[in-house]
Image (cartoon, rainbow, N blue to C red; front, side, top):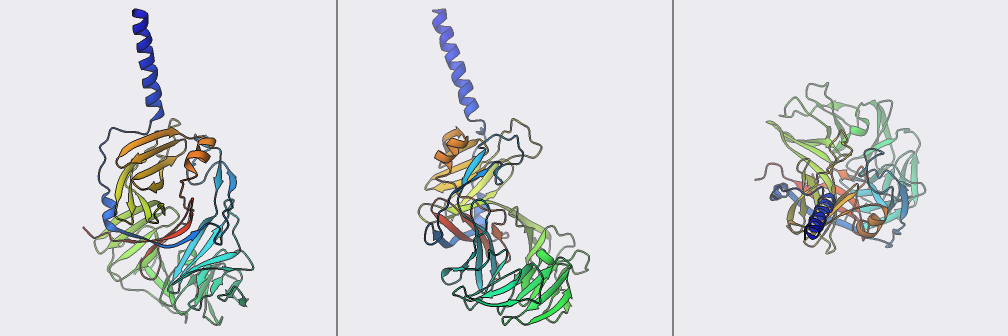
Length: 411
């Protein structure tokens, strides 16, 4: 009898150890409502289905995976299949223009142009920057080149050696170089400048001017007009500002680090709100979803059909990495949400955990990759002319551009 009892106790102990060890990221904390979603309006702008015309060319990339790895000793898959993805999207008053890369980061010689319709034009060279034109064409940089709506090269502007471009109204662009100079180029390729300008990659459009956050200036926001004159908009805003300038008005200002998806909203009272966008994707029914970080333990999942959910993203790191590590929202499918990172994954069904499992190379390919929506480093575009925040993403069914409006002061 004692032998049977001992055997039962050993079995129960082993079962508890295996169970606890297999779900290290689950907490006893009560789920809370996804309050962040109340301040967000989300909608799909454009969807490009695979092989129509962008080919679904999956490549294997070596470890570490840049979207989840922060050190060479962190657990998880050591190589990953990667789909093509939208490397960066550029916004101006004429529309959106996106650069596409293969999974191995090779940029493709094309531009995705999104206005009233979505079109793809082939280019002679892979672009590093784009600016859409209202005539259906596009500007590319280095050298500054104008392609028409069919992809034919119309002109090359040799006079401007800069590498950074910002599109402004009336199909004009500003070109900037590392020597702190800027040139204004109108739609016909006529050049003005160079003018001294310290904004470089931190410059944003304002009508036909470019502006940046100059912390040495009394009024802080400095703008450069096509004639070379500088102006300083009178803003009723606090002195201390963090992040790069994204957009501004008389009493509102948006700054942030778009490579990290972090946005700061200022009003006359100072920093009014912060938002960190974690991921974005498309559901099987065509709705857009966006996940935003709440804290080190949780994220809110917001879907364009109005459904919301809060999930746990804390990663119980056995290596004790000095920076808190987080899981990420990988997919939303009906009432199910997939949370994944490193060697951990959880399927939620509603607010309850449906399944949790350990992830290695094979498990990722079989159980994560078929669902996984992922974004590039520069997936956020927050300087569009009408205040829409643009999110670029790719996943199992194609690539998507998602629109989002953030209303920080709404209740």
